[in-house]
Image 1 (cartoon, rainbow over the protein chains, first blue to last red):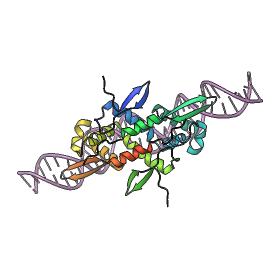
Image 2 (image 1 turned 60 degrees about the horizontal axis):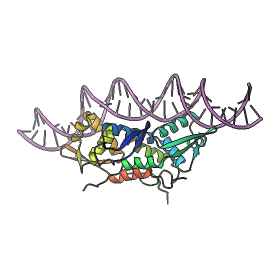
Image 3 (image 1 turned 90 degrees about the vertical axis):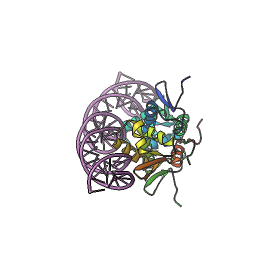
Image 4 (image 1 turned 45 degrees about the vertical axis):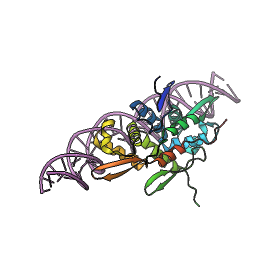
Length: 120
Length: 120
DNA sequence: CCTTTACATTGATGGTTGTCAATGTACAAA
DNA sequence: TTTGTACATTGACAACCATCAATGTAAAGG
């Protein structure tokens, strides 16, 4: 049975899954996948966007332009990056796109940063 | 008494400190500081480097060039980025630079990703 | 002193990314 | 069908970043 480690790719979506940083050395592929998720988090506009979405059950794209003070194409770009990282999911209802966070993905990403055994 | 939120800057070092994403909307400054830390994590070489350092009590810079297959200036660049993000700390002893992870910082960064109340 | 070793810094280069104007698409109301 | 709205896509530009060769610095051994 193959070891599953740090990150898997399921259905074309990158999904963080397992081992903390210190548990075993990250492979090239694992590191690339994890880095792309952290890359999605490495932008102030996307962090505030994620914060806005996490504060409600669902948020419409149209409700993000105002607080974030960015153009509509820029908002669309950032929601796409967060969604491709598996951090949010969206559903189109009528003319509106409704976004919600994916808590399991956030928790799994957080888990990567866990340091199991503090060294003396 | 000033609210302390998500991130503080202490002694010229950015230090994540408090509130999870969904607790309150991130300010511009908080988002910028947090994004810079995630930026340090958004590189596969740095993630593998962090993983190597976290696996031991201390690791010499000279022990990183081999596994990471990068030039010495590149290794030096990446250790600097991780250190400026507060994720590792270094000490020079003799000719060698010894690095160790900062578990508290890793945990605080992980805490930012925490989603407190899962929405229905 | 001189040489060697471990690491930092500089400068240059190619690749990536955030931003927005312009345009395209899909849906709903009139 | 025509108009308006919400969002996606494209294309272009500027800013940023990873990488390494060359060079600098500092410490240890001779």
